[in-house]
Length: 292
Image (cartoon, rainbow, N blue to C red; front, side):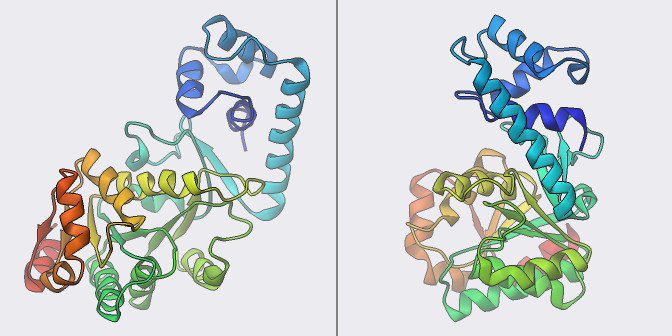
């Protein structure tokens, strides 16, 4: 990892300093990697991006944490890339973009011209599972990178459908990469990487899984995709967050009539939220994918 990654990891440990403030701070500095951590913080305090109530002990602790993350990532085979780096995927440069990514596998596939997300409930019907699996399979057969979140249910069906025909898929995680969440999908995660795909997270392996991280992960799935295919879901499903971000980022949302019939409450809910979607016959969806 480079010096900028260390700076970003350290800054994120400071109270009240999130990714937007870090990006604003580092964007105003020419060659921030040439400055010490203390100098960066002083500039942040001058422009009121970092609290003056950050003390030397806090700074030392944050820097020690960053160095520990970097050392352990090297040992665990986890790589990191900041938004300053040429390797940072173009598909993840959007409003509220991540500023640092941890990854395993081939991150370059997020620059592939054809990318689509397959999402849905963690407890879909058998029909929902079958549809997500077939969607992942058809996308892969048409040279799409399939994007999802490795969750049980529709997510892992989409990944598995893609992998069955030799496709490449990316899983965005709400956890660090040393202990995959959920643990039941560890073997699937390994297969994703060995098949030319990637596991990607904004979170280091030292961070715990928190509810808000699932929502932040959902924005990456939508942001990185050209469009979203949704399987069965309910009004209370986490799928709603991904669809909300898809709408925010102007990514089309597609499904098919039998899924709409099973998930009418979910679709009615997103309609009330002014989230547009299109219901297509299976053949129309196939044509969309084939002609994208």
